[in-house]
Image 1 (tube, rainbow, N blue to C red):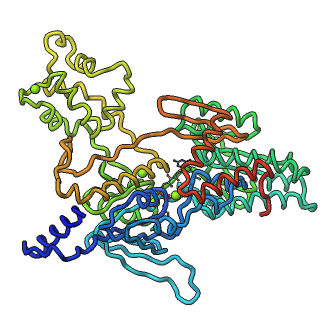
Image 2 (image 1 turned 90 degrees about the vertical axis):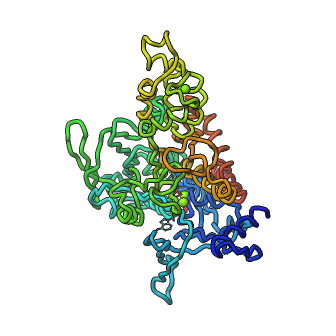
Image 3 (image 1 turned 45 degrees about the vertical axis):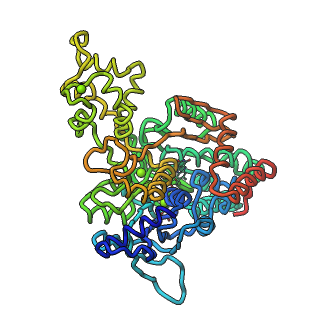
Length: 552
Ligand code: FAD
Ligand code: MG
Ligand code: MG
Ligand code: MG
Ligand code: MG
């Protein structure tokens, strides 16, 4: 209650020119959150500051545990098991939170207002539109599929982004087998119907291919014995390898396993168009084109910005970017009260070289114009926190420590003096900015960003009292919190046949059945509620015991 009183007082003094009205209840600050996906859910789960009034706007009144979406496509897990109603999450909070099932269609940062359209099906009314005022806006709307404007993709392909998509795929897969089993068809027609094509060799495409292959081998062979030999699964990848964001060992293992499984992996194969019957490709090397009949295509080649974000970027002069740029505190560049996180945003990491003079000045505590190794070493933690690329650089050059860096910067002169002037300091850090990488568009990043931002909002009053924050490098301007830091906890690639590849921090790679059990336990433990956890685990057990449910 101490901090509460402080805020009441601060508000009163601000609005009444110093005449204390400390008994007046302060007007709650309005915080508007767009989206109920990974970033939004994580923010909500971690927010516990009752001094805000929170309004959520999202066309989806539930959270989806996306890593298990591929498992829904072939019936290993039920759709409802991986969805958690957002109102279940809200109700447990001591914070004043409301929810509107609507999509935001426009952001007006000058007037601190957003415009929304209700997405609830309504027979009596047409589209319901409304505006919402905010003090703080948190944009967590995710991204949408990217077709790269390839003709026919929107009309003829399946996608795997939402629960509905997974259910449609599941229905379609089962119907393909029913259709192909009808007596009137030729073998040619059956083959076409049972040709499943996956475009994109990223984690989602690969996992779907593996799910489908397992489904065919475990269930179809028993249920549809006449058509089982006519099934073909093709995976088209435009680059030289599938899973190219993973360790080489995993890529190799996956390509070999798919080869043995009879999944036709076509590398360097770009899709140029799709019509109702055929998918056309062009080989990257020799430019050879070909067209193949298909029954079903899953398009899974990556993501692009939603129309709302494209429009907003245009409005605020961010132009034609792939995602909304924020600073390391997740604030949209140029705005103090708008935050963006998850797949719709990307952090504009500051370059060391842009701030090198200031870094040097702060490190040089005795103002001598040179840095001793000790001075350098003492500021290194702060530098690494503000500029994560420095830590990456030092890690990648494993044997290097600060003394080696200094020696290299000074060349032969090292023996005479271990102090650096600004030019030598620049030389020592000249390569670190090349280590900068954008964070991947993953649930892991969105989840950590949501939790980080909630913690900032939880501590907002405390930090307003102490606006300078901890004595860190802050680049230009002052910031109240430590910048967001991502901790990579590893990633999984389920490859079918109860085998999973796991890439864990510290270069650990593990592939096989044991990692499959790790996968089961991690994904069970990551569930947002005990309800979904119980549902998911019982789905897994049900499948082990009874096989998949194939009623489409
Ligand atoms: P989302 O989770 O997509 O949430 C966006 C939210 O915004 C949704 O609630 C949406 O309804 C809402 N919204 C959309 N438009 C508007 C609007 N105009 N106004 C208001 N709200 C709006 N990542 C991993 O780390 N590990 C995995 O194993 C993994 N597997 C995946 C499997 C699949 C099939 C998919 C599709 C993704 C997977 N991902 C995985 C990636 C992960 O799901 C995303 O990175 C993550 O969902 C991003 O979170 P987000 O909150 O930014 O967006
Ligand atoms: Mg979200
Ligand atoms: Mg989600
Ligand atoms: Mg992002
Ligand atoms: Mg000095």
